[in-house]
Length: 424
Image (cartoon, rainbow, N blue to C red; front, side, top):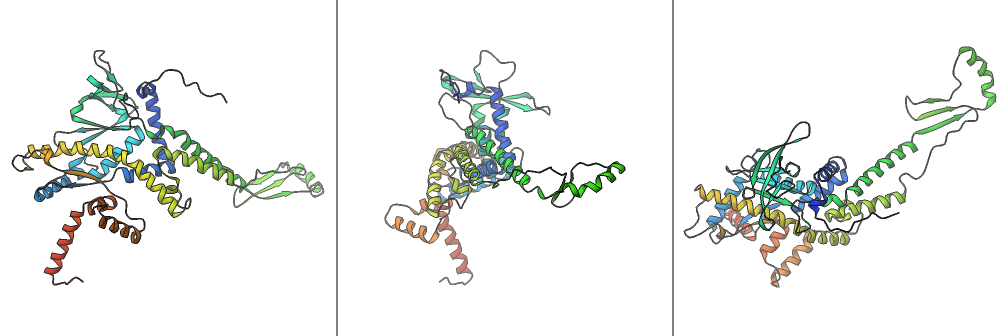
């Protein structure tokens, strides 16, 4: 097979993905997510770890920490976080990552009253007519040094066309995307390299199901001898009946009544065959690598306990860089929202403090212990040896701070004492 000519010029992803190609890519990834269960599961599995975060504030003033966490919790409610009042902060963040996977990116516009508005990637396009004095790249206005100055937001109409809506400055918007090069302004979906593999897997599975149905289609074949029909042929001719084969498809297993000398051959094999299962497994394994997901996560019986854990630990390493992009997004919008709380007088900082003195973090939700009896003992030994802190253990496994645990334990102890209950 002749290989595809790759050409001799190095081109940026923005030049390779024209408006039409970018649109087809987005249609393909969204179709996979809607119609192929394995691809939809892979995306959900990816979102479970990448998009789940807890907020904690660790400044020196504990009362201020409580107040900041209280305000962030209030802001995180759907009615306060989403301009459409549909999605809470956690669900909004999950959808941001999902659209980043499907479309390559998503834009979030800051609204003066405090909530956010999500702009899906296909709605950011070059305005028409295009000002030749301005540098627009697929709906992003580029300034000095390649910095984003503004985006051109469009509306979809019922016929699938786009109508220019408004221009939003970079100061009022946040772009969250997947980037693979410095000279790249629009994100590209990581599923781009796996679309054909997922589609092939889906088609092959459809063919395998069709083949299995054909193999089970016919249950009984009747073939008559010539002598059995000799006396009946004259009667049939007199009655004007048909001599053709009869197939009863009304009820139950299909019965085929054949003419003398006719035969029915049904394609039969081991359906699906071992070779098919192996090929399908490898194809799906490679496709899931687009999101760095180990195959043992898809098929729990594929590997041993230690093999599954080893694969999952390697997956956690690959997840860190993806989590950092979401953390950066959350940090930017949190600084913006806390600044508005301060400007509105809702949040008061100690004298001489600025918002940079607020030491807050968005901590990944964490992964519970695989084998609690062994993992807890290992963490205790690591803490005793000075290799870990209690907060590191809590963040890694539960996504919160050890101080939070101490506070809750103190509250429980005070409540038990007031109730006259003696702990043992």
